[in-house]
Amino acid sequence: MTIIVFCCLLTSVGAQVARYEVTHEGRKVNTPGSESGPIRIDDTLYYSSLQEVSESGGYIDFGITIMRLFKSHVSENGKLSNGETETFGINHPSRHTGNVAFDLRNGIVYFTRCRMDNGDAYQNEIYFIKSKGGKWSKPQRMGGNVNVRGYNSTHPTVGYLSDSVSILYFVSDRPGGMGGMDIWYVTVSGKDIGMPTNLGTPVNSKYDEITPFYDQTDGVIYFSSDRPGGSGKHDIYSSRGSRNSWRTPSRMPEPINSVEDDLYFTVNCQSPDYKPLDTPHSSGYFTSNRSDSYFIHDTSCCHDIYRWDYVVIDTTPVKSAPSVASIQPAEDTCPCKQARRLLPIRLFFHNDEPNPRCQDTVTSLTYFQTYNSYMFMRQTYRDRQEEIADSTERSMSLAMLESFFGEVQYNSEKFEHFIHLLAQDILNGRHVVLTVGGYASPLHNSAYNVNLSKRRISTIVNQLKEYGGGMIRRVMEQPGSGSLEIRRTPFGSSTAPKDVSSSAKDQLHSVYSVDAARERRIEILGYDYR
Image 1 (cartoon, helix red, strand yellow):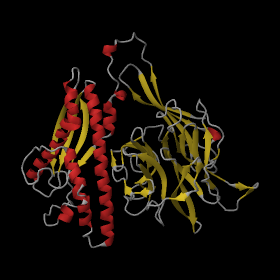
Image 2 (image 1 turned 180 degrees about the vertical axis):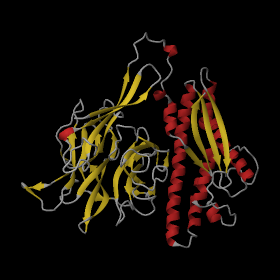
Image 3 (image 1 turned 90 degrees about the vertical axis):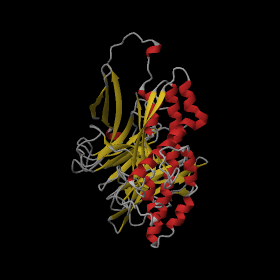
Image 4 (image 1 turned 30 degrees about the vertical axis):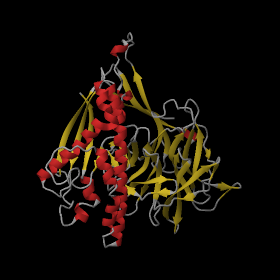
């Protein structure tokens, strides 16, 4: 068993040290073949292993070994039992099975099934099983254009939106991506499956992005990529966000990453009815073919399972306890941490709203008033897309439009949650500074668009004043409460891409296209204290 230790953070308080520790999990689960996709649910580690399959004491004559799902019990001290094949009924006698993902809220297990075409071309597709009455259904192939004939769909992972709709992230090399393997997503609500949408930049690139895992608690997606700037062939990265709104990915430090392939990073999970893990979000697993992994012929052929632990050691000398009055709330317990996870929040508007055709810099409208009228216009936007003559372009535009209005709704829900966190922070006595940017499409001139951006920022100021019958205003009036400052930055149309139409005669593109609609927004960009 190999343990690698790396100090990744030295705090400024005393001598507190935080570090990653990586442990090779040994021969209980690792073999000279390849292991992949480890994920711990409660006290069970599920993973896939590429091994020879035998029946009735003899080997099946397929000429290949088969990837199957295995499981291992995790003891209270973290030790693994010998791996054994799973009991869900998803393993196939002649096809590879792997990349298992759990929708714990809805009792669904997603996985990849891989078949071989013409003896040498792999075709990966995503399947699922569902629990009903304590029994698992038979494996079913995913619908909703998740799988596309002739292309790969694989590496599923599950998250949830604020309305409890499931969101399935997966990897595909289908057309419409940014190059190689990209991460995509669909929403799943019962039998309804949304259109696949590419995560876009900054997560995806012209290189391969694979093996995603979405940590719902922290709102972080982990994935591997062979993009430039890494230390190995595939490095593990993390990015905060949801759907197709993500921050710039950060490369995980050593020893998580190495000079070889590092893949399938996961965080330990627990089901709703299971007793809490000791440290559910400070440990997990990944796979690597680094130098101490087991192998058949060459030292970098095969991947093994490694456990990671994030350990904080406090070496500060013990002192007398401070008075209660001197204790300040820790960053981890403040609403600010949850609020910052929601950023950036993008709130969208119809063209020239609010208060069209004027030079005012303020409005009496709140954001949710403009939002409601905007959402009522969805059919108008659809009708305009139907004017596109080319059927392929028309279908793509309609799909992009549906995805966009889903993004509009999702951000409004984030904003509502954000307001509650903001009020709680102010009630705790914090002096909060919000940075808000205002944007416009290039349909009008620059000066007009700057004023329009100011009007749009004004709607969020009004919303914060009026939300919940003046909740934040009443909070700030209480003795010992904090305050709120809003720093406004009206960008106008200065940041709009040059290919966004500014033609008043071509409203299909300058008003009703998704490209133009994305520019008509305000963004909450920063959440700080003073």
